[in-house]
Length: 475
Image (cartoon, rainbow, N blue to C red; front, side, top):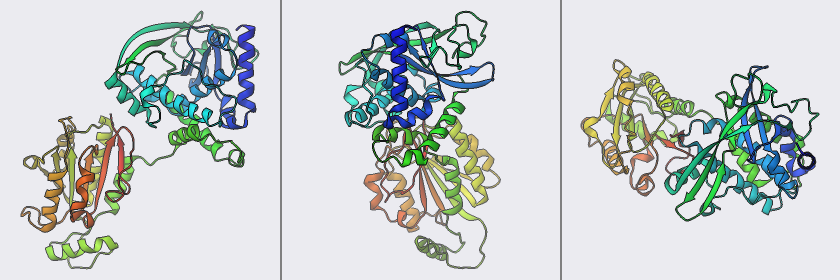
């Protein structure tokens, strides 16, 4: 690398290591292999297989030409923080599963850049300067959207043309040719994030350059800035674990003066939070939120009324199983095959707690003619019946007929359903009229239920409807 590039890289490194507001990033800096290479792009976060250790490693490539074009090192600090945030937010591994990876990369850039810009403008990231060429979707600024939500917006409002660019790797790590992590030799095989043969000589990576035109008139060129192999996720998780320990350490917590940067730290904390898998939550709901059953309808209604007080009145012929689990499936949503398999497994396991399981599909209307009833002898058929799980995208959704039907059961008007359900599950994307109709019915006050929401991101649900809905990541 040139003397100018090396000087600015060294200064950027010093800023990251010395600045109190950047303490988190300074702790993570040496966990990444940062290389400066001769290429016509800005930077790239990547995961690679190290053929010496046989483990996937994380790194950042930075263009010497880009560094030389800068007036100062503060923009380079921004770029390095930006690429670290890609890794912490699992954009590398998540991006591999997205159909349009170019648009997803743009969406991720928008989310990261708006967070960085907000903290710079609030003087919470001193020593950092926003590059003029950064990727921002002007019409979405201030909306606090997730990368998945921005991606959906781009699918609807952007047209693109793409071209592939081959980059010959060369350079040195961390702006220091003496760094022991790499020789800086382009034939150093451990440093290539894409080559699988490592046969020596020049090594290349291929990235995408995308021209984007939005329907509001904004146009820009985006160059792919993260790339992964199939083993990226464990490395990302490892860096997240390190970040979680740093944020919870006294070193970080005791600094009350500007050590945290609201939008950036908020973005990181959202990415690294530990969540219970949705299928475990569902299993817990089934085990702990069901009422006792009785063959005597009057006693069943007494038990139902006492449920809100967590009390079950005694009666004869008590059994370990309960009467009915009822599942209403909104066919206008979407759910991944993997999550569908988990759902089927949990419901099959629920047969231990219920005498029968009833599944009914709906969209704007209730498909009662397709109602399917399972018991312990037929529950194995649940998987076949649920393979389509509705979720065919048939259009709009209403829960009006669903709520009416449950209310008729609650009033005792349905001759086929003599027992009140022990538990009701709603599988939906929640894009419905639920919030407008829920308060009009009596059954939600006394029959236990749970909303299982297939959505690309979590969103606020009125706690009067469900204080703790279960979110399943949707396609």
